[in-house]
Amino acid sequence: MRASLVQLDVSDREPAEERRRRAVSAVLAQGAAGADLVVLPELWPVGGFAADRWSDEAEPLDGPTADAMAAAAREAGVWLHAGSIVERDPDGPLYNTSLLFTPAGDLAHTYRKIHRFGFDRGEAVRMAPGGEIVTAATEHGVLGLATCYDLRFPELFRGLIDRGAELLVLPAAWPARRIDHWTLLARARAVEEQVYVLACNNAGTNGGVEQGGHSLVVGPWGEVLAEAGGGEEVLTVDLDPAAVGKARESFPVLRDRRLGVEPPRVV
Image (cartoon, rainbow, N blue to C red; front, side, top):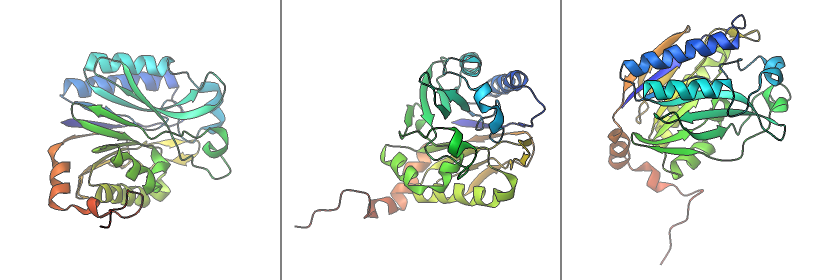
């Protein structure tokens, strides 16, 4: 399976419509180059730190970004994790919602980010939390969906592998000042769960915050298979879906879990 992570520059100066156009072009280019799965970053249409614009630029699930991404997935013939958008629910709340499209352009799954960053500011007070763990079965393996700040909460990832996840797909708007945490935690989640981690971050400066870039693909042994720099860039990596099962078979650590699983019977 060939996966491409599109690390976009989300600097404030660019209108959302122009960024959508560039994202579509990137998806089509990766499809033409043979990608099976293309991943975009978190909140790339408006930016993860442009909180004062979120309400005005919030979209429904059939809004302009979803429409553009559906068409791009269909034309490219790829599974497209279109990063996330500011979703306006018909009932009013805003959510940080990821969109996964099939190669036919159908919206297969959405994931509303469970853990909201900001403490008493930003996302933590402007958006509602999601409440559902989401996996997606594809012909390339089962994808587990998470977003940015979720990376700091390992219990979510245990929930994902309990639902069959073999590849964790993580769009982000992770800032440069904590980029060491980003790479460390992405590798930790891969080692803990014995999965691939596809972590796609933003670049540029958004809402006055320098984005960290350094998107990366980590293998099920924790090895970094590819890592981007700080600017706009595309990472493309060929993955072996069978590697997850091989890692779990050769080093069966997950079967020794004692907490959060059905305890063994004592007879």
